[in-house]
View (spheres, helix red, strand yellow):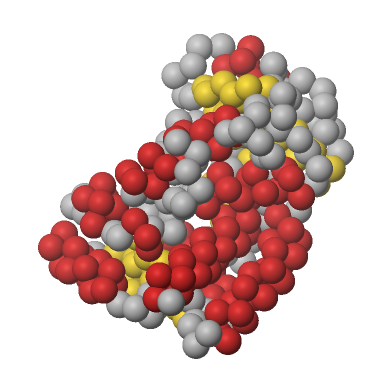
Amino acid sequence: MILLDGKKTAALLEVETKNRIALLKQQGMTPGLAVILVGEHPASQAYVRSKDQTCSRLGMHSRKLELPTATTQQELLRIIEQLNKDPNIHGILLQSPPPKHIQEKEVTLAIDPRKDVDGFHPLNVAKLVMEDSSGFIPCTPLGCRYLLHAYGISTRGAHVVVVGRSLIVGKPMALLLLQKGLGGDATVTIAHSQTPDLASITRRADILIAALGRPHALGAEHISPGTTVIDVGINRLVDRSTPSGYRLVGDVDFSALASKCHAITPVPGGVGPMTIAMLMQNTVMAAERFASRRN
């Protein structure tokens, strides 16, 4: 069994990112990322800290906006407008999920597509559908594809089953795998929580991508021997034996699948670090495009 080490792969990818940042700095530009967090969601706070620390490590400019839960939709939209106009900020993202009174779709629409490094703006979604490389691809699907490529696991002609249909992972993952060329050319099936007899679908997969958002939702009965498993899920389970009082698990039962599959991502240390690495790459790309327009 091959362990698909996202932490190690992300560290190698950071070398390339640092080189690109160095070239931009020679032109007098430092890539800048603004991360907006509304409310005090513990997991979101941890994600934002991780992104901020990665920016610092890479030598990027980071602006962390931690707003109170009571922040109104209009106040948030005004902040987005200011960031859209700020020449020192090249990437903007709203940490999900925001409080219920925040209309996330409206906020996404308000972000300049050229700074939408999460790839969720309808213009960038359309570009993904059209295989237009001038858009931004959502970071988690992009990280999954990169991880497969890094370990020499080809998607060409493979049957990939994506379990999950969210706009963040499931749908863009399927679109990315369907693209022509390297990292694509797959036959893709999308399944989800309402798919009857899910195991009969997932057992036909050469590559299984689990993005249900439910801990240990998929077990050994969901794969055939030799399957490659990409576990996108990050779920917190109460565990009083740990210092934090919880432990992180994926959407698949790692211990049950490990001896049966060809390759598998761990949780944590699999897809998570790749998502952040791709966010940094998207932000650097946004800065490079800004520099090109400026010149």
